[in-house]
Amino acid sequence: MVYNQYAKFAWHEPIRRTSREPKMARLEREFAYYLQHQEELVRQYQGKFVVIYDSQVLGAFDTELDAIREISPNYAL
Image (tube, rainbow, N blue to C red; front, side):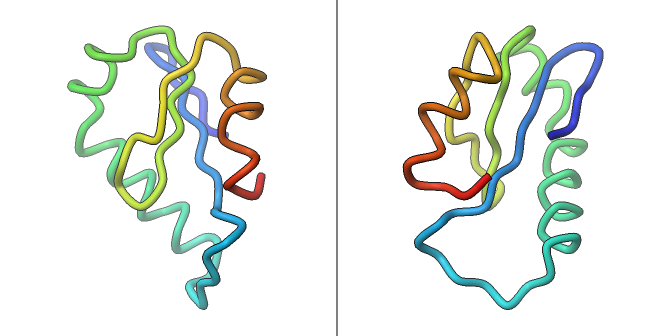
């Protein structure tokens, strides 16, 4: 998970999707998406834990635990 002073974001890999892309490359791609959209994401989700995967926001949650509970059935942590 990556923490930002304005908003909190977590990235997770899907369980059902297999990918040959190295984990660091995926993380770098998702972080690049976050940086490119940081102003918009912070404005929209300030103070929330946001899960981003494949350059899409999967959800915004009040707590990290809420994010994990909601996302983990379909995505590996």
